[in-house]
Length: 112
Image (tube, rainbow, N blue to C red; front, side, top):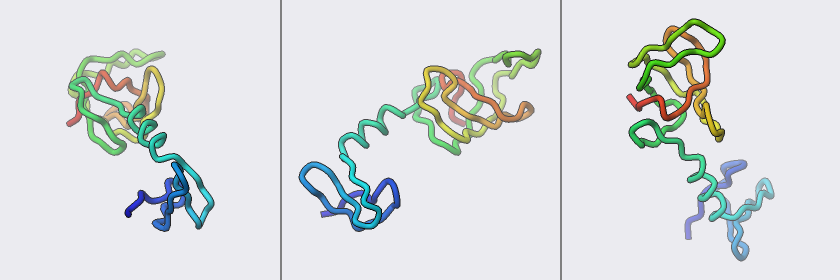
């Protein structure tokens, strides 16, 4: 039987103990159902409903005003997702062309 690698140390020597999986190398113990549920809840979707991942290239789906600035990011501006956060707003940490690093809400971007 094949088990997923340890989420902590990526060891392949994982074994099952009742409902949990155990890693003999680092001693980490986890429930695979909880990990699957947690990953589903972290799913962030763009304006079209496409799942986004770190490293994806996106474009802005609407003009956005930057807080505390007179800068307006125009529709079609390209960005690269650096990190995804589990927040209510501003889920994406992006590098935006012409504006630098900033947080963007996922519903205002489309996967390129």
